[in-house]
Length: 440
Image (tube, rainbow, N blue to C red; front, side, top):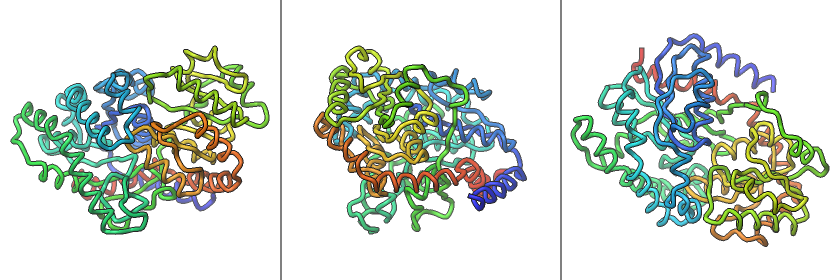
């Protein structure tokens, strides 16, 4: 712990010695994408940099409450409530369904995402973009000759590493994993090729081929905002890349828990947290009943956090406390274990709290985080959402709380993650990369 504090102090001293930059931070996505970016923005501002945040219109009041100028884009809450997005949540672990739905959503909503970028994206010294928006940020970087750094919450770059491959062909380090990663990268670029081409046309830029897009995106310096204790940094990643640790925005000090929640978490044994974040369901009443039945069968207590669960809380058994929201940094400390969809931010919060974790992946990077949690020894095998039943959930809930090794390993990982300072490490990496890119 002492070594960790000394390292953070040295990093912060290095950060504060750098020149101030005007940074456009592009954080399009769900809350799990925006909250880490907001934590990073706060750190950048404390280090003397000027930060403007591009985010969904639904997040603007929250982000501006931290004192940042924003440029609004696609309302992600509204998009995630559309029929296509609900299908993505329900069947997103099927690769064919995921590619089809993602392509349709991108083609339908990309203009809402890129409009503010086209108008204001070039007004900066440096662009920093999350994975979702990097292909569009690259267009702005080219148009206005601004350097671009990608800040990723998950490892999408091709690599031999099985641990850092979203969909490894083999569980050992192998060229096969890198080959499949290259194939997956091309598939992702193909999905955004038309929206990117439309954006380039509006900006008066020539069209480029899919292979050109792939090559240009591979050259973007990369900051991985997750812990190397969960995903080790691959040896074959490019020189301008770094895995810096998670970016946490703690909000517990601004929040007062309701009495019912305090009563639930003060009882022994402590309850399990169950929540699926921004994931929606075609049948929320049925899903809530499934969760309640599983809790009863397993003989555990639970705190279920969801807006849709609140609508059906009258049907909740005594073992289940229902809430609509609570800061993860507070709630994860109060429970015995966590069960969730596997979003990058929620996974990070549970692991930092040292809690054994069961993931029920719905789509996108969530199966990856479910696999990494299990392979790290901090929880049981994930249950894919399309095959979730009350029996399978009950079985895993019992396994989660009755396997001592999960709690022991989660506690070890939590201590390691708490000793990292991902924001300070990320700023140091950003300043190093910016210098290499010639930012003055």
